Amino acid sequence: TPTVGEACQKYGHIFQRPRGMYISIEDMGSVKSILSNWPSKKVDVVVITDGERILGLGDLGTYGMGIPVGKLNLYTACGGINPDRCLPITVDVGTNTQSLIDDPYYTGLKQPRVRGEKYMEFMEEVLIGLHEHFPGVLIQFEDFGNTTAFELLEKYRHRICTFNDDIQGTASVTLAGLLSATRMKGTKLKDELFLFNGAGEAGTGIADLIVEELVAEGMPKDEAKRRCWLVDSKGLVVQSRLHELQHHKIPYAHEYPEQIKDFAEAVRKLKPTGIIGVSAQSGAFSKEIIELMAELNERPIIFPLSNPTSKAECTAEEAIKYTKGKVLFASGSPFPAMEYEGKRFVPGQGNNAYIFPGVGLGAVLGGLKHVTDGMLRIAAQAVADTVTPEDIAVNCLYPPLTKIRAVSAKIALMVIEVREESRRARGGRGRGLRGLRRGLCFEFEGSDGMYAGGEEREVSKPS
Image (cartoon, rainbow, N blue to C red):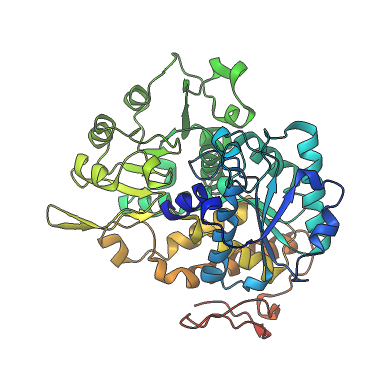
């Protein structure tokens, strides 16, 4: 994450050749003809951004192309998707970052961002154009601004095969870490109370999937929502603030007798078992807060998920040291392994790469029409299930990345199973997993040989 973030910040200055497709809002009315210029006639996965919220770095405009390119590299490396069938896209609607407008090497339109009705008309032309030109394509939204991200997801999730990695992928990998943490604690998810520092698309997306998991385990939805509390820039999200809240925060605006402005105070009053950082505020989990979590909990869950590393709410070393080794830790950016009082700690990175390549592989192999929240929940369980006693012994909540292809295969099969079960529940006939055919995926030298590009092979369920 730190590397790709820096690459995006300097994208125009290190630019050597075009990677992917740029579609400008000035191309409205001609998007279909532009798509027809792409040399590959079959595309299975598109990753698309408008560059407004790149990682925790903000509006990088077309310099954000490094994100779709990097994500699709991971689709190939982690999921085996054929790179010839991957298409990175940046839609250029301008930028509100003045330093980019002043940058002589900036690769995009030097104008303020287009918003509102014209923006949505443009995105309609792009997304439906992709859906029609590349039938069956999976479109992954990446690093759109908060309001835009929710609006696009809600508008298109039931029309085309799509998901938002920042909302749903982050939620899934975080849920996987939380399931591993409760396993290590010897508790259940229903026993936990989570407090979020940050209430944007990542935070509410995680909360939504926690609620979905709790409901699946039998908890009433209203009670499940009360397991998740949010703190935004103005304080604790509560009912008395309904008039000023964005729509995605409203489900988590609980009744509370007082206004709490400070995150540390919220920890003191609510006594959470876990805190989740999605604020991109370095140091938000202070020594005071971390020590307080250790006082309140035998095994506090502390997840500083913001990235790149410079935006993390705390470091692994701080969390381990200030809790005296009691912490169950995961982060959005990588931190090195360390020793504390003779015990080895390998900080788990809640990297979305555990999730989206497998979900994408399942969508491609299974010919999915939609990606549901239930599929993301099952993907989280698949990741958590691959954590071994050896991982637990070093306090790591995620499997090693060396196992990522096996994890992706497991997720793909489980995602397809969810679709098959849904089809049977509606009175249809399932296609059967062993009958699925592919000829879509890619094997590179040194891989584990999961799939070979260009061949038709049956997909068998991993043991």
